[in-house]
Image 1 (spheres, rainbow, N blue to C red):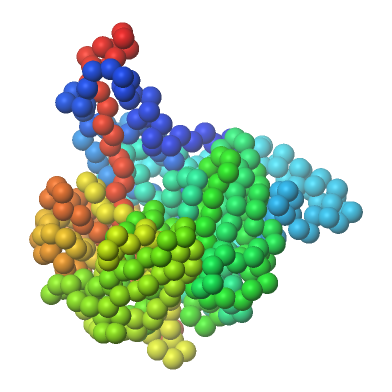
Image 2: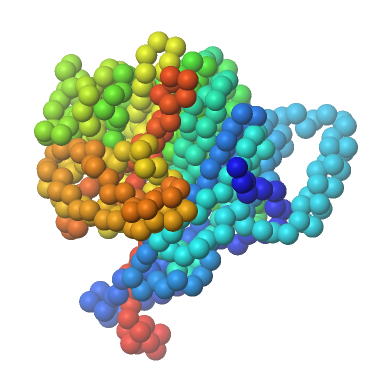
Length: 522
C-alpha cells in the first residue's frame, strides 16, 4: 500500500477564518441600506484543524480532502494540510508548563527538542494532501502512533465548503474500532456532553493552535451535581502551531460518567475534539455540540443500535424542561417512559433510551416546554452484543442550511440519514467522483415532515476509491439535518463512526461592486 509520509513541520502556517473575507467586504452600517445590493459570493479562504489520530501502534489512518464545485469560485487556488508538532501528553499546569517539567534535568530535554525543531525546519514543507480540482477528493494515509495533528488552509476555488475527513482503524487494545472525525475550523468556545473520567474510560481533549502566537484556554467539567473541581484546568497554554492532548482524568480526582466539558479560549483560537477510549466498548471521537439552544436535533442514530444514552447540559443557572421525541420513518414518536427531561441549570443529566430506534432510521428531537433554557446535547450509541460491542458519539448539530459535504465514503460502508423535523423538504444529494476515478451522480429525495430517512445513495459510475457526498436543501425555510455513518466490521465487532453535516458556510453575502464603491466614498 502506498502511503503519504507525514513529517512534522515546524514552519509557520497562516490561516484566516471564513468570516475574515466577509468582514473585509461588509458595508458601513451607518450608510444607506444595501441589503438589496448584496450578492452571495464564494468565500476566498478557510482553515481546518485535524487532531492527532491515535496513540496506538496498530492505528491505520486515512485523510480525505474535498471541496465541492461552487458556482463563481473557479478552479484556481490551493488546499494544504501540514503537520503541527505534538506537545507533551502530560497535563499542562495553569501557568502553561507541563506537570512533569519541574525536573532539574529539563535542559537536556529542551536541547533535544530544539535540535529536532531545527531538523524539522530543514525539511521541505510539503503538504500532506495535494488537491486535484474542486469536485474530486484526494486521500493520504499514515500508520502507527506518530500521526500528527494537521493544520490546514484553503484559498481561491478550494476554499468554499472545504472539508477533511480523518478516519482511523485500530484493530486491538484500548479504544479499538473505527474512529472518525470531521476536521474543524478554529474557534473560541466548545461544548462536549458525554465525556467521562471513570476508570474504564480514557478521554482526551485535543487542543490545536493554528496561529503565530500562543493560545490560552480554560477547561471546565460539569457533572450531575454541577461544576467539578479541577486541579489544573485554568489558563492552559497551547503554543503556536502545536497541539496538546489533555487527559481529562488528570484534571480531577473525581471518577464520573456523563460529564460535560466546556472549553473556553481566553486568548487566540483553537480547534478542539474529544477522543473517548473505552476498555470494552472501543473508542471514537466526540465532536462539539452545536451552540446552546432551546431546540436541538441529534440526527442519524443507527437503526441497529442496541443502546442509546442521551447526555444533556444546561449552561447557566436556569433549569431546562425538554420534550424528547424520535423522528422515525413514519413521523415523530415519544420514547416510552421518556416523554420529558428535566435538566437543572449548571448540571449534566443523562438518560438511557435503550434500543430506541428498534430497527428503523431515527433522529432525536429535543424541544423546549414553556420557554426552556438553552442546552447542549450528544448521544452515545452502542452496536453489537456481549464482548463484540462498539460505541460512537453523535452530537446535536446545526442544520444543513444551503449545503454540506462529507468525505471518505465507500461504495458499501456508508449510510446517509436525513431528517426534517418541522416541514417536508426536498434534498439533493450528489456523490462526487472517486479518489481513483469515476463520474459524479446526483439524486433528489423528499423528506416528509417529522421523519428520518436512511436514503439509498447515488454511487458514482465507475467508482474507484472513496467519494464525497454533498447535501443541498432545496426547500428554503425548512430545516434539514443530516449525518453519515461509516461501518467496518473486524473480527465480528461492528466498528462504526458517525459524522454530522452542518452548513459548510461556503458563501457569504457581500455588496456588489458599485455599492461597495459608494460605501467607500462616504
